[in-house]
Amino acid sequence: MMKKLACFAACVVSAIALSACSSFEMATNTNGVNFTTGEAETLGHVNADIWGVYVFGLPVISGSSVEPGKCVVFSDTVDTSNAISFLTHNTKQKLNADTIVDVTSERTTGWLVPTLFFFYRDIQVSGNILK
Image (cartoon, rainbow, N blue to C red; front, side):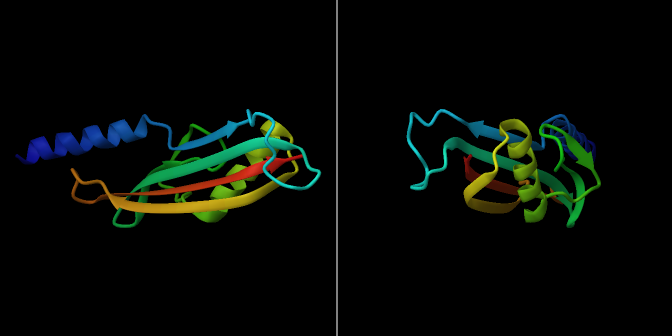
């Protein structure tokens, strides 16, 4: 029984390690609808997501706060300041936008049910981009 549990935990950790732990997505088709009443041009909506897996509060693997789709090991990057930095950096780099409005964040923590000691943390930050 212990070998099966250890094998299962190794499979779960391997699957997590091979997945992207951070993402940056943008929606630029607004169908001509402005997200604000000012004179600024609406470029779209952006969303940044960073998540990680922890054991007893210690980070095992988490998303890179610099490059989308990358993971880092034994580094705690799942926090609001990293998510905001990730959002603003990628928005500036990919869309050359100078304003993000209506920024919201959502933080989630949960137990990975099939494992005994692993927990996940996730933070998502989104906003509307203007130029």
